[in-house]
Picture 1 (tube, rainbow, N blue to C red):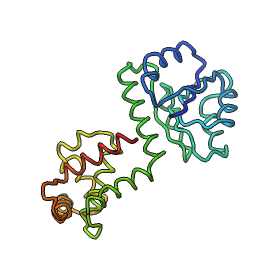
Picture 2 (picture 1 turned 30 degrees about the horizontal axis):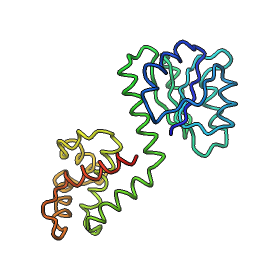
Picture 3 (picture 1 turned 135 degrees about the vertical axis):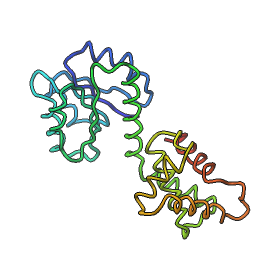
Length: 228
């Protein structure tokens, strides 16, 4: 469960965003609502908060003050902060390290807001479970008898991880264009080299000639999504 805090003195907007968008996410539970910076800092100091919806315009301090205070607090897992603002110049000033930031607008329509929050939820889940997700991919490939001496096995691991991070299964429709291009970039190899090595690693599996890279990727991603 993602424990969330809303910091906004406009309770009408808070009620609106709760009813129209946030309540649609079973993974998010609004633990607290604060209307001032002081209230917010007290809550953050004494509780583990995973996600903060933060209005930058508050009656006692601006939202940037809260972000700076979070950076000073002895928090092991820093909260993911979603800034609620129209002030692009002010947003550009938010350069503190170790804090994940995203931006929503009070003028976003409900569908755009939903899509933004869905992306944020996925990112929080990934960073919270990154090691476990990587270990699961490795375990699945190993159980299928992929040989890690083949470069293609590593490229396949990177492909699966990239698609999961992107939260977009449609990338499977054209691996060369949508994914192998990125894998080739991070490895300094050509796209054909990436594709050939992945196919070679897959074809090397004894007794499993019906497997294709796309099928392997799809099956492992489906398992990851069912767990996380």
